[in-house]
Image (cartoon, rainbow, N blue to C red):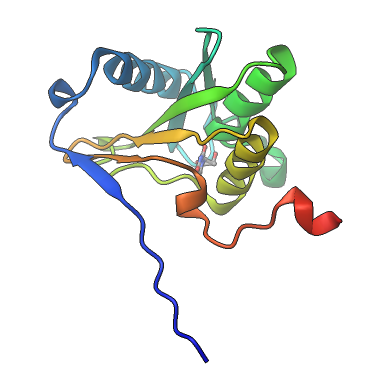
Length: 160
Ligand code: THU
């Protein structure tokens, strides 16, 4: 038996002003995207903004439906749009921002498990880590890859 310890590195910023201009632009775009979310049922508005290697900035937000299970998260809306329209361009970074009735979340927005799965697939597809910038009013968190948030992920190589 061997007990293995997994480590992840998380950068934490107290405010957006501490971040690089590119990161700030991405966070502001994610906040803007959250404003345009279609979330009449949960009233939880999420925005995602990603930057591609070709310089394109792609935004997405959650899209809900009266048939609740038909909705889609902001992160996947942005990723699927990017992968559909720029299939050759690596996804470099993604910012995620979320607001509820009280405004911007205090703690960093956390992508759900399904979005983590799709993020990891995109990392595998382009053989490139996706830097995640998770926005919060009190704290902004940065991780260097989506896989660090989904250890032992199910990946395409498992299919043989
Ligand atoms: N949501 C996202 O857009 N991204 C996440 O990672 C978590 C959840 C959306 C889905 C739904 O429209 C609302 O937030 C409440 O779950």
